Length: 398
Image 1 (cartoon, helix red, strand yellow):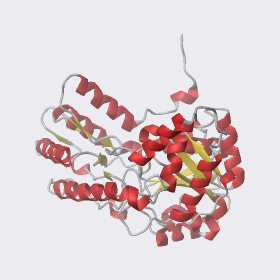
Image 2 (cartoon, rainbow, N blue to C red; image 1 turned 120 degrees about the vertical axis):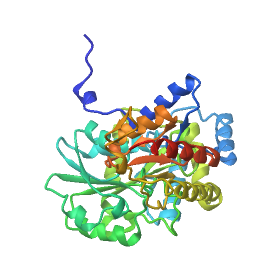
Image 3 (cartoon, rainbow, N blue to C red; image 1 turned 135 degrees about the vertical axis):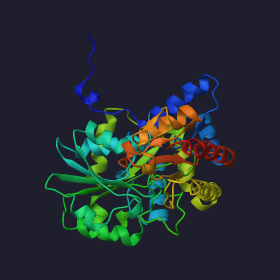
């Protein structure tokens, strides 16, 4: 009898990938599904980045690279961190990985011992908790809701810290809420952490270029946080390069060396061709490359908010970044259309998928079971049609 490991049994399937699979299966049957479930820009990779990849092929960048990445690519990332984030690193403090997800896994596997607690401000990206469990750590949620703009404050953080707390992981802009922590909010959080010098901070900044506020701020620039912050980033979101699978960290040297060590025993370096494409992305002025996409997302956000706010029982905040809206839909819990009973967000998502063929993701695996995540990385036409269908079905619940 085949039996998988207990380690695997502790993990949950990715909710976003599961809903995407459900959508594909229905589409394969000829059903007109509008999927607003995946976190992937609906834009093409910029031409100059694709051209760099083609040149890399022609120049025979087809061999193993150093585990932490090509020196020239890491130099470009060092320059990017300085230019965009005011973060100072050497090339030895950079580790390039096969996506930011691997970067996060490297960090947790390197730093967590069994039973170490990792604080997760809710909502959080679904994979954080599972990566922590894979690393034998313990995810500890810090609840937030629409009334706090899906952000935590100093008191909420302070009350969650115990003697077992080893790490804080958060994203800003946040997946799934789109909330963005301001400089003053992060300084407030850092003052709490100053009282607990053994807690490390993992700052996931993968959505930094899809930020509708005036300026992105990195917590690693705060003096007391410099030597204990690992900044995670990549090219998937801001440069529409999800399939290229390139993420990276800037970290204290000993942590970078640890991540390099573990990556060397798992995947080694990521694709050399993708690295050379990333080098060009890092050299570019992000405003020139990403502004068109950011402005398009902002227009869609406003359109979608206007339509969602016209549906009774759907409560939205105004997300300041990324490309998601995270409405509170708890008004519908306990309601029915006569056939389907909506007990929670999972039920609501399946109800909408099976009745009006719109795919959303439950907020439960993000830490907020009263919400759903709606991606607006879709055409305006599809967004308008999706909301029309959603409104029609929700109005049938009583």
